[in-house]
Length: 417
Image (cartoon, rainbow, N blue to C red; front, side):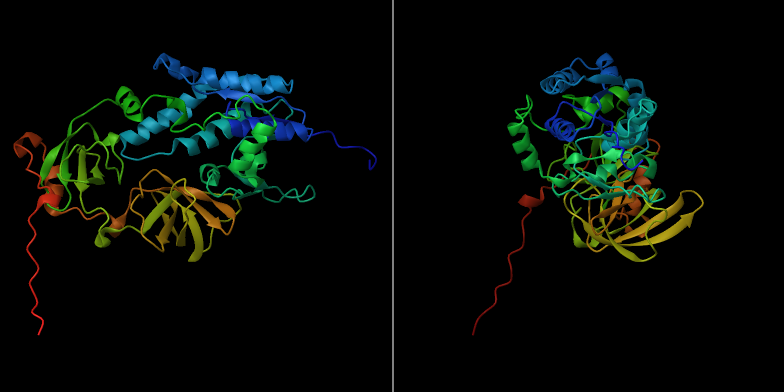
């Protein structure tokens, strides 16, 4: 009937205890949404492994924010789901030499996956969070239309990269109240609202680890296995490492080699060998072509062949201009060949590449192992050394020459007439 007023939307708000989700809650509360906020405690399982757990403080702040506007807080326990669908997958990917993105996995499988399933029958219209992103939903009349994920107003804090692998059914259920304001505006609103966490620092690092270093987590769950470090260009044996899973392409920390900087350029997972180089950024070794699998598009169809788009290969305000070509392989299904307009040295198998048409995020895929001819060149001697079964025959590591202390020949003097 025309005279009937529509009931207020019921929105389940994911509350982390941080300032972003707290401001999102207050904005929705002011708009008249009638739903209690929730916090998903996905880290409680790790109390079995680590003495310091960050969830107690998060829950305290979340409760204080709710008490201030007199709304109940409901805790949804998803620790088992988080372990089974995120952490176990991360461990397995590192064992196979790939570098996964925990934030993308958490969004697709937990925050907007297991959490949505847990509240599916509770009558909520939408789920909201404090992500910096913007969702444009189709009109009520356009029931077959697709929702679009768009860049937020704050291009530095924008989190569409982390949300790029959601499905269309997931996206249709989401609201992001902070998509149209900046981080500075959020801080200002938090102060105006007198939120108890208005000055709380943003969380950093991987959410489930808290104060634990990632290397400690890897050591505890995968262990150590000594392998060798080999210079990619010469095949020289330079030293040992703790296991290839501690290293990712482009990494320079933790190699403990003199005369650097040294960078990880390739890994031989089968033989537990890490190839390194001091020439990672030289012009003849730049990377700008890679393949992407496990494709996920928000619309019915992905980009067209040879379409020019923008892409992100990591969470950053920076974009690459790129050209994409659709391929199909028996092993990986549909694959996208991506050619960047400029070089990027940080491409790592297992990471996500998100694609954009103007301000709209089309979706994303996972960067594959296959680099074809664009892989960092590893010499034949290095490959042969990596395949040696008995690495003890290598003897002692070679003495590394510090390039800064090498004697350079004096330039030839030119007589001026």
